[in-house]
Length: 226
Ligand code: IPE
Ligand code: IPE
Ligand code: MG
Image (cartoon, rainbow, N blue to C red):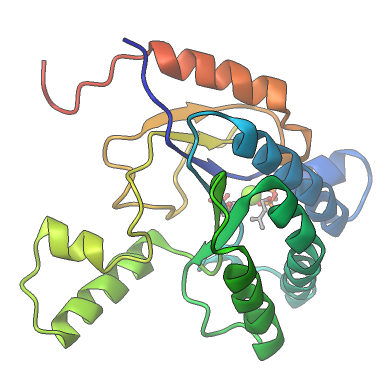
């Protein structure tokens, strides 16, 4: 039997190198990356099995980048969400976020909330953007929440208080040739199948995604059994 793919997660990496190779500024790479987000998200919305697509857009460590780049990413995110709302509606995409939104500007948080509310009844796909997200930070925040309500820590209670009360991830893809997790979904990836491609995120195509999914289907997932 081939594996079912319900939850796909992607570490969208390589925007900066894509731009540099073309003699462009890094910000141009992020701009091109937005088109890939749109293409891949809309494909996933038409895919019969994929229910959830989680995209790593900004890590808790990405604040280390030059202020100009961070500011540009925030600007791009706000612009993307505003422009995207009609497309989310057209394709039946529900928008969600994970991560600690508290350091973001009020303006950005308002657009995030507005987009969540507007799209919350859409059912073709849930697109989750990981924003100021860190796997360790998410686990710490979960434990804090359960201490606050006086619950015993267990796998179930920690899972329940994570930002992602969604299904575990079936397949994780990282683009750009790097083979590391960079603090993404540490808890949820315990039995996830991993796939790496050399393509930079702006070049990542639906055809390539299809072929990675084909490979994934043939893998044997054992979950510790035999
Ligand atoms: C990924 O591309 C996008 C974000 C982290 C926001 P990078 O900006 O990390 O691109 P490279 O890795 O420098 O090429
Ligand atoms: C991971 O990419 C974060 C996102 C894709 C948002 P990075 O480019 O920040 O990761 P490192 O620094 O190469 O590990
Ligand atoms: Mg990178």
